[in-house]
Length: 132
Image (cartoon, rainbow, N blue to C red; front, side, top):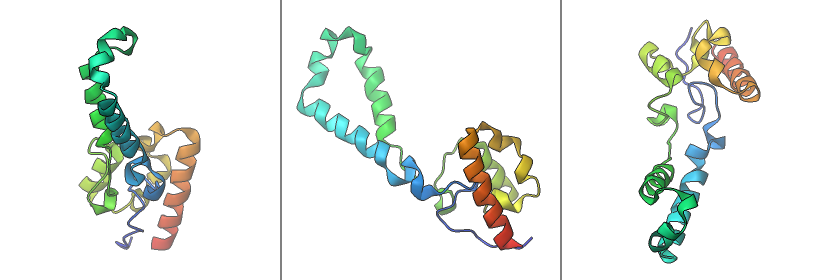
């Protein structure tokens, strides 16, 4: 099968990166805005008076992690470093799962919600067809 590189905004799994919160930074920007608001309101000082919110340091650590959710896209050196699909593609030197003869039945795509899996497979089929 030819080594045609798919659209740079199409991840290994077939997701359109331009629709992903990591690429668009929507979650990251919202978390950053919440941090700014919390600082402006001096919420850290008031946190102990609201025990239902849990531990401040744990919350702040999680908020910082959300603020850091930014991705350039798999094919541009980004992507979730823990993603099994990404790891598999890198090991096999694939630009897309569509290069694999077993992508239709791949158990690594099984983690996706049914609607999302359908979208991934639809995109992978298009990529596969364009490489034929």
